[in-house]
Image (cartoon, rainbow, N blue to C red; front, side, top):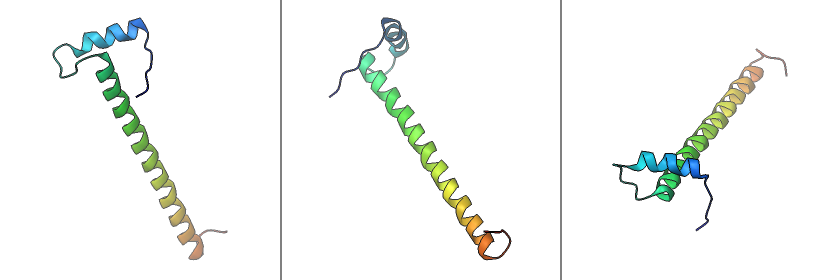
Length: 70
């Protein structure tokens, strides 16, 4: 396990948000939120790569059909 430090202000803001939730503390909430953000970033990056590959495939197909110059 790796430890990270949060500013007192951020920790207090998190404490204010975890009341009435299933989170047992600031560390659990922070780990959950960071995991969600990373999952979204990784998903967006994967979609971007797929779109780029798809665009390249279309462009290559159009070139092979003579619609675009190589």
